[in-house]
Image (cartoon, rainbow, N blue to C red; front, top):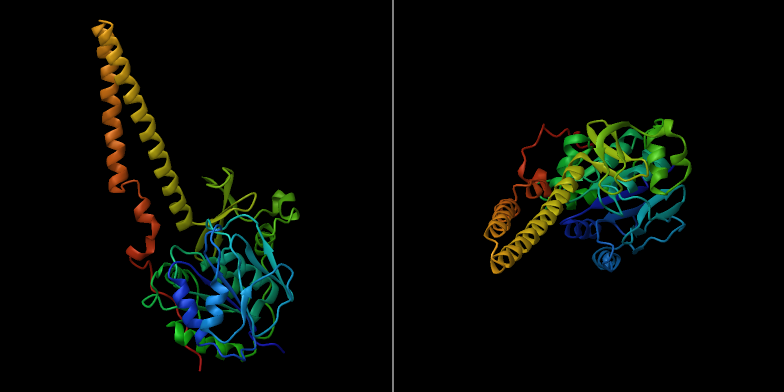
Length: 354
């Protein structure tokens, strides 16, 4: 009977250092396949496999679509592609972004939970916001193991802290200890039996692969309609709850956690404020030009009317400029909301086994 032979790891800001340290401590004869998602911009050439190859003893490479899965290897998600798991094979997809990312941690974790159930070990490392929390929920629902980096050690503690706040994790440890825990769990048989799979989980995973069947039947769309619009496509967002995790997903598959949606809305607000500032500056400049022209033509009443419009536009532009400079639109507050916020409740961590 196979053990916990599928290890999925997610990281974002500050995650390269943590990930490098993690693979450095993994044994060369690890009888498991390791799959890695790190948030990397789509235009960047990723050298992460080379970094991990030099740091550790497991062969590492970017995953290829329909590639067979082999134990003792490390598979890295290439930029701008979701990394998904199917029975015995890797799938790559340019499906809808999740939490504004492609690849996304939750997408990998969810597909692993569906394909391998209790054989999965999910690991969340350093990162901003909360990608990975919903994926760990899926892993736990299917009987897998959930591990997180100790937030006090992480350069950016938001992702591991979000997991601790929302998931019944099995352990929160420093990275070097995480490697030992992974090696120990790999050698343990998973619990007998396989918890049933939630249909919404299957539909969401199918959306990541742009499977048309996932969009055909509206009655099977996961969640309930919310009052919010999708930042990516403008469609209605449907509200989902995975345990304590509140999430949103639109009809075509774009997905957001509550924190990620708030951050995206803040960015859109900032963009709208810059557009308003540009329009007001242009209005002031045109009104001043027309006022000068009216003065040259000897029409003081018209000049004063345009001068008043210029002054009004300048006042409103200065107000918006002060908001942008001070960050009062909220963008700074939600960029890394959990770094500066108190923990909502005590993390639920199971005692270490053995």
